[in-house]
Image (tube, rainbow, N blue to C red):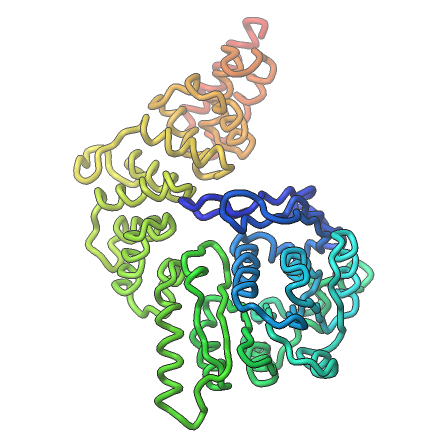
Length: 488
């Protein structure tokens, strides 16, 4: 679960019973202990559990921003003081987790209806509603048509439409099981758009949705589509805003727009321009918009966006600005300033910043006789690389092993060193294999094992010979002969 560094955790961690990267798409992912910190101090209300398909619904649950959307929507609905018969529609609700969260916290404030074009998605949604004891109606149909047939104008809409043309199914279908059947929650029919138009469903919603007076609609939009979707919404007569509460959210691939009626008339060009300008002002003020440097046309413009984000204390912006400073893209190259930004980002939890700062401290890419720029400090480099290595970063592990192999850092000072050295040895790194031999012979960080040491010596000698380092290969083979002669 992604968390914004510097923010107190608003949400409980998701307790994932399976790793979706290693689970076949035909299996389900169980997500439990899901609650909202509506007072930003403790879980308020129920904690819920869900059964999701690993192919698509888990994608929603990966990002804490989506759950904070739920928190924002709950508070907005309560503040709106809706009538007693108010209706909230979760359009295209899939497995129903958003519907369940909203109903669990809103209770009798309003009725909640979950719609989807695919009945198999709603079957899973109904299971989730039952297991969590929430009363949510389900209606099958295309977009807003089934809501129209109910004869009641919704007071609230939430809609996260399919909007990534790369997700459109091809042959063989990525959402199909081995027998060709579509996975629950991700049926082909729910993803089809004309010619892969990524804004198709946004446009349909804006043109087709009817809402009660003073109603509010929340529309999820991928960052790369924001400008186009704002134009569509304003052109269809909606007032558009990015709520201030979501502008600081990062690490999510999408954001939330808030729509209200009435908006500008399509015939009034000035009103249309004002609608777009007002919406984009909020968009451009958001942290993630700066992090992604959306809409920029030059390195200098991108670097300026990164600077704005970095000055706001955002680790992702600090990482991006540090990268621009170290490469000289859009700004003068400045290793000291790059190191400062990498340090802030590293302490904010950015793994790549930890690696970049480690490389800078190691002097990666610099000649031995080059004393210019940021000073080398291998011990400090090892500390930052170790942060990243502990989080599974393979490049950090490899760099750490190189520091051990070159004698710059003593591996005995690191309890995890043996594990990383063995891992690099298994990836055919000859220097790591030689280091592993030393540790096996001395019993450093592992049990003494001369037989295994001989095995790795032979492998290292073969790799050195293959790479043209014959003298080193011969020396390693002499060690083999010596150990065997000594009865090893």
